[in-house]
Length: 251
Image (cartoon, rainbow, N blue to C red; front, side, top):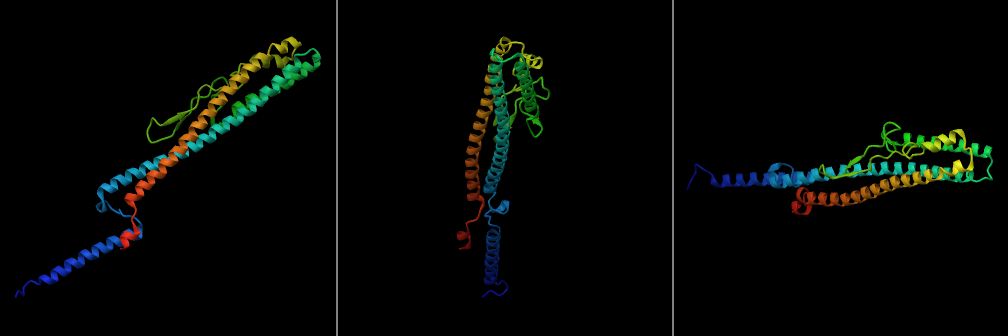
């Protein structure tokens, strides 16, 4: 019989300590909803879960970037749609001025109308912007808009860009000759007729720029849909590692 050391008591204390430790750990997990609350819970799992969380956060920001970029392309598209309407009206007025049933005074009045329309075309180009960045011309009327690049992923290579060189004003659409003739009034049906090709060319150029913005918008929307799916799957993968199974932990 040994009386100096109470081995049974020591075993009971050890068991009690371990049980209390396990109980506290379970209560912590149940209260936070997380299986991993500190690195010692699962060191490798924590590293993987943190990497997945960073990836999901980055993709979430790129989705926000994409939504902002879609808004930008829509602003540019609507502005160019109005410019297209203006060019259609100008073409109609030129057709009216190109016939001899229109008087000289009538052609002068048409010239004034076209001058006002071209001024509004310039106004749209200079005023259309997103967060201070002009979209349909450069910083000055004589320069084209710079290429805009949108970050749409986790790496520096994951970008989508607009077309550079958009200059949807009188100078950029090569309508300066039409503007000069309209300012002084068309002198004859022939002079008005000779400018119709210029307007046709401007319409084609504007439609090309508008199509480029539309293609960029489609590309952005596709990227957003793909990244939303990625983000959902990544968060689900993180949850499997980080979140606690309530039923299992309660048991």
